[in-house]
Every structure is written in C-alpha cells, then in structure tokens.
Length: 214
Image (cartoon, rainbow, N blue to C red; front, top):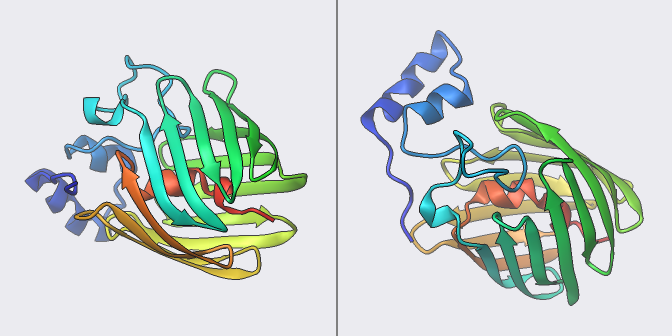
C-alpha cells in the first residue's frame, strides 16, 4: 500500500500558512486526496467528498490490538462496523442521516451522536455504560474529551501518521507506516500491531471510542 500522491499545488499551499491559515477544504481541493467524512462514513456517493473507488470497499483492521486479536470491517456503503476486538464481538450501525452510532462493542452498549464539519467533529453519548465525548479538531490536530471517567487528549499529525497523548489513565502512542500499512504503538495499556487496509490513521481517530475499553 502506498501513501496517496500529493500534487505540487498541495505542497505549495503550506508555506502560505504563515500569512493566512488555509482551511482543510482548500488544502484538499488543491490535492488528489479526499477529506475525512463528517462521520466515519460517507452518506452518499453523490457527495462532493465521496470516497474514491479504492475507498468504497470495506476498510479493515487486522492484527493485535487491546486484549487480543483484532479483525474489524468498516463498511462505508452499508454504514456498518463489524468484527472482533478485545475478545468481544463488534456490531455497530452508523446512521449518517440521523448522525448516530449504535450497537455493541467491547462487551457493552454503544450509543453515540456525532456532529461536525470537515475541520471538526464531535462524538458524544455513552459507551460501555459510561459517558463519553470525543472532540476531533482536524485543523488544530488534536483530539480532546473524556471516556470511562478520565480525560482523553491526543496530538496528531495526519501527514506523518502519528498520534500521542493519553486516555484511560494511560499513555497513547501510535505510528502509521504508509509503505507497510502497519499501525504500531500502545493504546489502553496494551500494544498495537495492526494492518490498516483501505484506511488511514484518521479513520482510527474517528473511531477512537472503539479502542477505549474500560
């Protein structure tokens, strides 16, 4: 798997940041990339930000993460997240129209509402019997909130494929290698060694509630 190619216009956009902060829309418009959806999924192929063909097939995370093997399928077309994580079944439905994520994961119930723009998304509700709020600021490159009664904070760099901070009273450190599609690090007191198929590190950030088992 190779990292998406950047156009010359995209690379030249960054030096202008010192005089005028570019929006994510302008950066993506000057590139061959597509921005993250307003949710983990794209509501319609007719959307101007619909995923390109190679991203329409279900994304997949496989390897080791948390308390055991991980095998998750993220199907944008059907609005479904299914598989196994932390030795428990995952069965979630993402309703882009009503902006909800509901189902089971990590042995508990997930009921979330999400709102957002291309620059900023918020996931809020209950997960695994506890209140949760995750505020993802793409332009500011940070994720803040709380889960399982403790604060969550990550600083991330989408272009470098890194995220660092803390959650569940433990350090978080993730590094994504686009050449091997491998995600390594530590989350939730456990090592991470997984492969992302048709996914990028921002897909992990968008679904970070999944990786915060109490």
